[in-house]
Length: 608
Image (cartoon, rainbow, N blue to C red; front, side, top):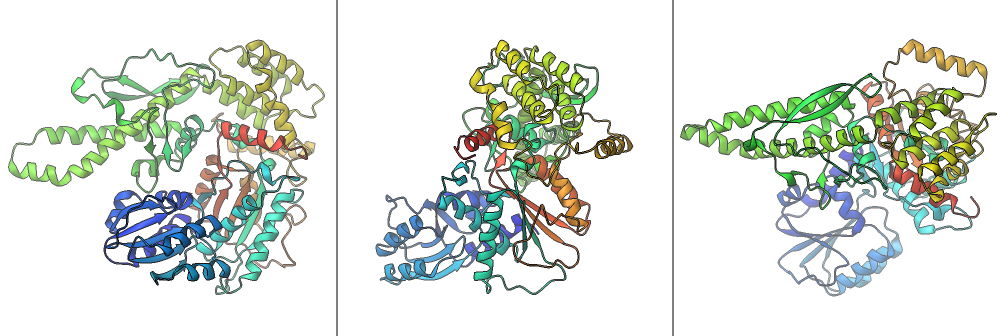
């Protein structure tokens, strides 16, 4: 299963169905869907010379062009399309809908096409956002209106139709299981199952030895993962800057919401990369240090990364270095970036020694590749430089070590003391302090010596507003012990045996990196599915289905959002080639900031 290749296949077929110059008409969502798998230059190669929004009323008449229309099958788009067909601006129209098109909509289009300009109508099931080859999302950061008494039917339909699209694009008719005690997961699962039963012809595939599985879970079952600092490239970029549709906006402020950047470091004239050996506690780290080389001829352009005002693209399909390093930890990333810079430096020296016509011809032939390499070096050095500054300025090593300990150990006295010390560190930002407080609240929610009152007072004394500190109570209201469901013991503390077993396993694995001890809940879920040990009481099937044999294809969908750390684990698991192929998706992509926002939106409901 590969969601990137599935969407790419659809778009290729769409753009190649008509020869000659053409225009592409899109809506807001399909614009993003295409941009995640195709660059503008690739579309130009398909003879698409103009891209426009369907709802743009000021488009000029161009009867010499044919139009490819790719939109979601929703009423708003059908209305715009009806108006378009009544007064066509192009010679022919080829209609492609990103999901199932209801017969009533098709009838309406036929009535609007009085001039007979529509040549073809297709359903191409590309109704979701591809992030990685095994990661997708629906770009729905706010799902709070799916909590009774509020019920946004349009929002709910977007989730269910998106999941239908994922299954159809992968040509899978899945068994559906959902997390019990979570009304929304059950409701989504049953609606998807209903649609599959109603559209038997669409879901008629040759029966395989094992059925694929769609597992729908709630973010509340694992609130820890989005609260932790992660150390892989893609995760760090999203945590510190945010990745939106493969675009990254890297600001000059390397502090936090209430911390100004007093960047007093000298401007780099060229970059020499070294690995910093020790952190503030004297432990090996692997942080990248970018040191100035006094050679103004090699000075990179300051706007190589459009800091603050623009965006840079991070796409595994368009950026080879990013594809190779997106799941690398920060130490390995430094090594690989060093090699990239050295490769560029070598190429630069070669190009400076052009002495003959033949050498000049060779340089011109290789110039596009050289320019691409130059842009890659500038982009990634600039991003990693900013990440390195953030890590140093915000004492992320100290914060991360305590976060990991809170996630995997239960040593209340030690944790409380270290937290209070962190709160006194002026380098540690308000967001990181609140992150630690939330982890403490979840870990020690029922502890006899719970000191949450003292922690809140210290946070207030530090200058963090009471309105911000309320996120700690909201986290418990969102995903406290009573909200997480019966099926999962987030901290493995249900009994003495499980706790002792966890300690033994960790010592046997010899975990020597204190920054990556925690593993997300989905690891347990995937391993249970692989062993056919997923508890049917906690994860029931939709319908009376007797499972036979092992599952070979698993689609996990997280209501409330998914993280890049979970995506990293899925990628790592798939590379092991265990016989189980996994894809993960969610309503949105989370980092700590967006997770806090999601929590606030959800608990604002009166019935939450």
